[in-house]
Image (tube, rainbow, N blue to C red):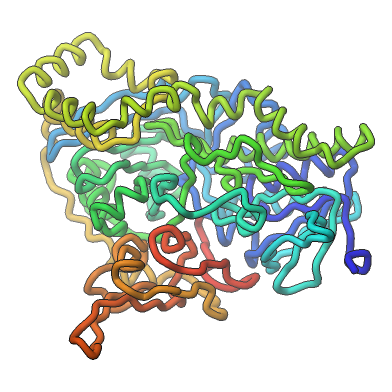
Length: 555
């Protein structure tokens, strides 16, 4: 019966940077391409920190595919990059110029609603010329199969569509990747959780307080003891007329520490170090959250099955190795390579070889070497062992450790290690790396921050209330509401918290025949669709229907 369905040469699901790059490359090759986007507008469902890089070694950059991108779709160029190691009020700052500019052609701050909407307009124009186009408000909910083989996709709002190739750029919660058995949500340590606030600030105020020119910007990272022992850190990026400020933590650490994401963000926002930029003024435009794949563990070495090719977060292609935080550029590269692989395979007379060609191109172009460094996999058994970390923490907190840090600081070795791609490519995912070392660096080498920070971030209920929702049918089913199975969601969900009556997940005590039982209740209405609960709770998780759910205005 699939012959009765509408057919295209290529189908791209999702119009973020990876999907846009794939669609543009296909259109440039004259391939009939349809793009499906579940948001009311491209970018309305997307969140990133975010910095987008153009790497010198990459075969595809966003400005190559979309001329005038930097002038019309980005915020500020980011030339300066710093990390602040925090211990209480003591802070030691390192200049990350070398790692920021390593293999970098340029780097810009972006806001996803503005950027993705701009990309979508051009994608629609380009794909219409080859017989396709872009449709919004369409949720692709699964793969269409015939005789066990993938031949297209199924959707909530329209009939199934068949295609010679399906490029899934549908994000970290990709339903297509899961349907194909190429992604699962079993392990919290495979994921990071990012939470962000976009904060108003006039352009001239940004220029003055950050010491930048009108056409320049700066990035700041934060690590140490201001995050309650959770593994990860914070960031601040300057936009044209706002700041993007957020935190990114290992999801398993958030769960284990029973930390509440909005409070971790507030710890950063209210630290005295940030008073030099806020100076008592704080107006939050938008609160948002998302999961981020840890590419070292989940970047799929064979991101394809039959006619399906995965790009970007859907393939786990997010590089987060200490201060190396790159995702959108890898999605662009992967999108271009996936489209290129399909066109080459078709030209050779067998489009079914597109997946294997794509996999080979990811290897040949060095993408997989960046995403899954061999040296990390070779050293993690030792560097992440409990014995090594117990000994390491003891040494770091001893007089010997203090003397060593002081000596390394005088020789500039600490700053050099933070700027070494080789060293960062094997940084272990441990509390020693993300908490103990930066805290001790701040304590031993840092300078005391004076003054206060009097800003008061919004309460969680205000943050939720300020978001835009078009509520549809419930899209998450709580399959086991016991506290043991799903209680972690109460603290780990970015719009839930203990003793908070709103949000998605709530703690409740119910009467049973034998006494009382602590359980979890769910309300999907304020959901920000990050997917956290799919990993930490016993749920059946899906995206809302096309155009439904949260709508980000900043992203």
